[in-house]
Image 1 (cartoon, one colour):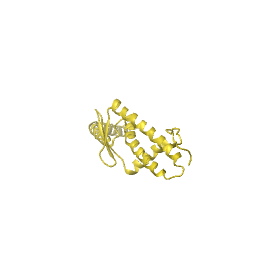
Image 2: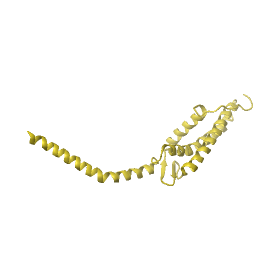
Image 3: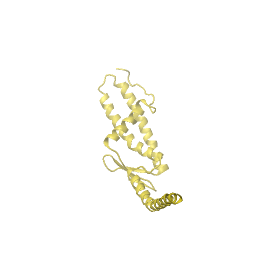
Image 4: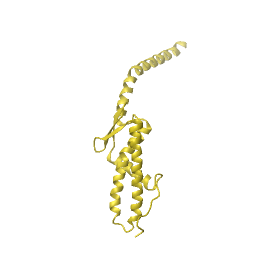
Length: 165
């Protein structure tokens, strides 16, 4: 009876040793490959750096959309209400973009440049990477930013210019 119990234990121990040897030799290679893939995807950065880079990319897009909408609202009868709100949101976005840029350059020393229609390359002294979006992702994220600044937690009071007519 004892012979039957030791064989599975020996095989189990042998399997554990082989697994350990396999992981010891393969995991460092896998880990390095994973880090390279993550850097290329733009995932190998801390949350604050990631947030700043996304703000750097999305805030100018949101400003352009709001400026375009402002031109469209110029034909409305009550355009002054809309234009005041849009002006307030654009000003707040520009201020937040300026502070994000300042923090990116002074604290993290990150530079970002657009390398394609929906691709951006970032560099700092230690790492670099490429962030690629789909056009639908950029549209959705820009819409979310605009919502925050028009009526979300980033919305600020605004003045109506020239009355209601």
